Length: 305
Image: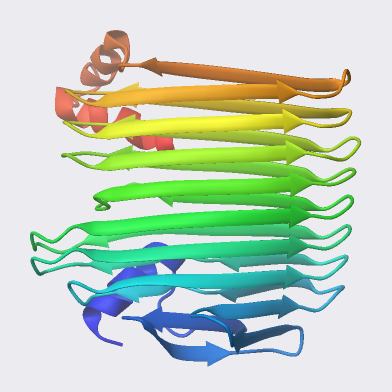
């Protein structure tokens, strides 16, 4: 592992070396390391670029790491990864992509992750995006997540992008059967002329299904953000979507929450708030000895935590 690869793996997957258990490490368009276990099998897809991850029913307290590293300027790829999580599992899937671009050509990674989550299964999905490098080439990441949840399953998604990504379009589509629960926390920061768009379409198709989609973001300098979240209640269900954003400098933010109730017992709520940092917050921290700039950084750090 060279220094750049090691740094990116630490940023996107908290890895300080080769992980224990199941993993697949992808670097510059190729799989450079893979390990399966008795409970978690990872195989190369036969039809297109990507992998299949199959987790045996009843697997508990196990994790799988699937980070992606791009350090070659001008490399562009699309990868399709499918996850099949058996009934009664309790597992953590740690993904993430880091692009280091020191050249003049755009580097781009588009990842399509499809999840089939079995009955009574519990999944935590962690995805972090990170960009570095002093070249003029853009760092582009476009993740797409497709989720099909069986009865009484639970999925928690924790997605983070706070540094170095010039352009991203993030799409999530989920279908929930009876008793299924989806919880999403998106944390995002843009600066410079960066652009970030997030789209969520969550279908609560089953009785007593529910979803909670929350985005916290900070837009700085001349960057642009767009957040579109749509909850569709097709049964007696509950849903909540929220966008909470801080706008700074000359940035622009658009929040578009949408609710569609197709059943009289669908209970759906949306909230959206965009505003600047309150002056009294900055003044309070400055009385403790911080400069105005340091106070802003502390507030932003706490907001995105």
